[in-house]
Structure formats: structure tokens, C-alpha cells
Length: 218
Ligand code: DX5
Ligand code: ZN
Image 1 (cartoon, rainbow, N blue to C red):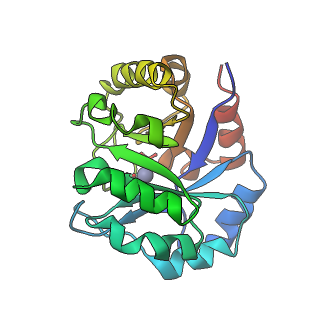
Image 2: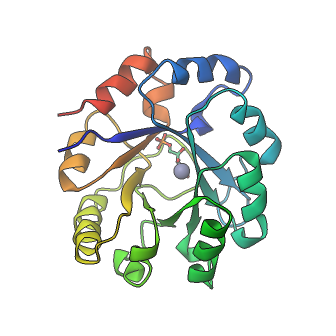
């Protein structure tokens, strides 16, 4: 089994000293930087937008994995590319013409992901799974860091993995919300490829070591 991709979520970073947190991330085995954009409409919270993402872009060369929790994401695809996003995930619940949205993300040169809320069935992805590079499985209700992991996620991952294999899809399964050193192994065993970790990394006394442990979970 290959090692998981680690994507610390900067939603839990110290915004009054981002430079220090990015130095830590640059010195760690983090693969992606997970960036949560919230609009206060799709989710009951507002996080940050383009100026901050552009500022973060100057602090690292690690892959920017941007998770849009916003309505009408199509309007901003070019702007996220320009801000430095490399993987852009949109919520299935926010997209009426999901296939068109995915085409647009690809056309500007980014990888495309689809995020699904805890209540959304993985089977809704059946006709798009061959066209995307990432599925972001929400294992908490989106909007906040530090929430408790929803146990039904394990079954969803297994069902999704089966679908991915059946369709010869290259999509990686990302787990977002409540990932800890305790549940990471079980998630990996069910088919997870990418761990998002906010609270687990940034509340740790030794974040570099915690990232190392997540990367080498067995
Ligand atoms: C939640 C966000 C997550 C969040 C994860 O809406 O999408 O990426 O930052 O935070 P933790 O790992 O603390 O649950
Ligand atoms: Zn996220």
C-alpha cells in the first residue's frame, strides 16, 4: 500500500504569523497545502479569498489543493488559477452543470476535484468519476475546522474506491474533516489516498512530527 498524500489545512494555521507556519510546512513531509474557501452562503462561515491565497503562494512551492465551499464557483475559476491553485475542487451540491465546470477547470490548466457533503451519495459521481482527478469526501459538515469525524465515511470510501476501479478512473480519494492519528490507518485501509488535516497538525505540539506520523501511518 502506498503512503498517503498529506494535505495540512491552513484553515487551522496562525493567520497572524503565516510565515512561521509555512516554514514549518516547507520543512515537513506535507505534500499539498489544503486551502478552504468559504463564502458564507454555501456554508455558514467565511474564510478568506484571493489576496491571502496569493500571499501564501509566495511562501511555498508545495501543491495548492483548493477546496471551494462557495456557490457559483464557475465565476472564479480563472481567478483561482491566477492566485496559484493547482487542484481545484467544487462541491457537487453547488454545481448545476458539474460537467461544464470540470471542463472549465481543466481548460485553464488545473486538476479538477469534486467535493461531496456527508449526506451525498458517492453514486452521484458515477458519470463524472472518469473525468476528475480528486474526490473530496467530507467527513464532517463543511464550514469549520476541528469537528468530530463522521463514522459513515468508511463505507463511503469503500464504495467510492470500487467505483473508481470499475471506471478506470485516476481520481484520488481525499478525506476532509476530523482526520486524526487514531483513524488515519482505518481510512487508508478503506481506500483513502489523501488526508486533509487541520486541527490534528496545527494543534500538535510538534506539527512536523505529526505530519511524519500521518505520512507513515501503518
Ligand atoms: C471543513 C474544511 C476542512 C477543515 C478540516 O469545512 O473543509 O478542510 O479545515 O479541519 P480538521 O482537520 O480540523 O477537521
Ligand atoms: Zn477542506
